Image (cartoon, rainbow, N blue to C red; front, side, top):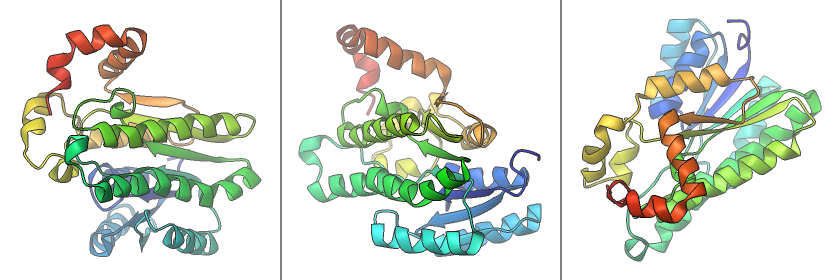
Length: 263
């Protein structure tokens, strides 16, 4: 209860999946969650449950993070009403698993708008007050796909590579402060993400036994809040694959071809 008690935790993409679970678990530890997502109805129900279950305030705002004007409006309202943001969890994102040649440019633009530009816009809105108070934590939900790109996730991986590049650079910019920056790199998680990303269901069938429980991932994220940690890689063994890839990319692509083409 001590570390997060009374802290303001803003979560994008909070209407389902790990965003929703992060909200519950943060509230369980005494934090005041602020929920952001496009589905106002879902946020309303989650906030009501949090208030009843944990007896903590829980605000919510409808927001499409790809709309940078709306990002500014909503975050200004949050800062006006709540005075500060202690933790920002940039969780909103989506992917489409298709070969580049088959992917409409509009889908590509949407992935970058949500996964990258939206994340950067939200971060910029909370940074000034964090720097002024010399405390805070930016947690960016990236992906193991940001370390190893595979067929049919070229664009999605590109967005997550961008998130990791932004996260690592921002961490260095804030190295002399008490504002922490953490990248979370999970493998596949059992969430609704794949309803859009994997319409065929083939990828889920192929990797189902390796998929992470969303509550496990969410608890790891919440337990990292306001603790200085560079990266959270889940599961650990999967991150070993990315290390091997960086050291021996050609060998990895040859011997890992069966795994790489599971989509």
